[in-house]
Length: 384
Image (cartoon, rainbow, N blue to C red; front, top):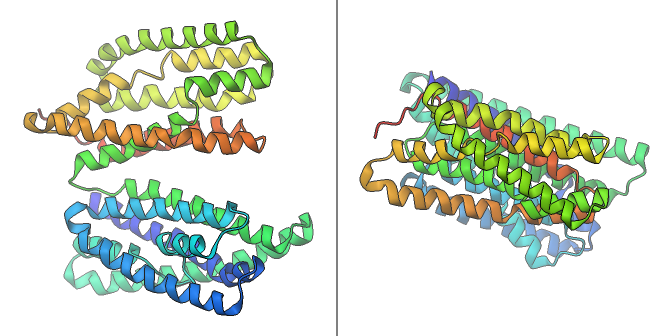
């Protein structure tokens, strides 16, 4: 059952990724010309990008079996996100920045597969199917890839022409939007690769927890207070009372989590208390007045921290006693790193008048985390 699931995930990631490559293949050279690169520079950048992709692919695939293929795939997705942000957001990028972003972000000048993804996916696929079926599976894998590339190219060309005609955007603005969707697709791939089965359970959990912490970092206590002040103009005394009440509710709910976990299990407690709290997070910016928005915050905090104690207990239970300190350290470091980048995105959104999107991203990403956690670990019981 898990093998079929992993095969389906790999075919889906191939489809999503090659669709993104198809969109980039249409506009990459056009974008480089639009921002002022000469033909010589354009040719040099594309050549160096392909060479750099080859070097990175060699390095990644060389270490993948030691570090973990899924971990390498997820890391490559993060680089896709970074590349999309550079090409989509930096107004006057230097040649060096463009080169680095294109190389580490595995941009595809041709629209075809580049970078380490295909080698890692094919390696995983080869272990999931019988030798007799392997060639047929790879044939379908390639068919899916080429078809997705074609559809991506068609969609990008049509969408840009439509957007320019209907909304009057410039060609350069359209190109930047395509790169931003490339970065978003990198994030989607990251979530999909998390669903793959892998024996390195601590790495798997660390990646999931880091994603959850990144989402939480979008709306830390101070950013939540800042939102309420900027939207409703409340006093600092009100903000202090808001955070006091929220954290007090979180403390009480954390204590109750032990009783809930004893009855429905650790993973179920983590997921089924977290999911409704994240739905409540999505509702905060949709409330028509201060009182209802504050009520959503209080309701959320009354259940949002019930996953903390079960999470620590679960990590301790799925590793051997002599590995617990290292496992806890790895997990906590991953969470800290993930949380560190949340405020960066929130600041970017707030600067553009999109502060409310932090709530949507926070709640949405956390819901995806909950579903991925349930999918990946509902069948893995603590043994220690």
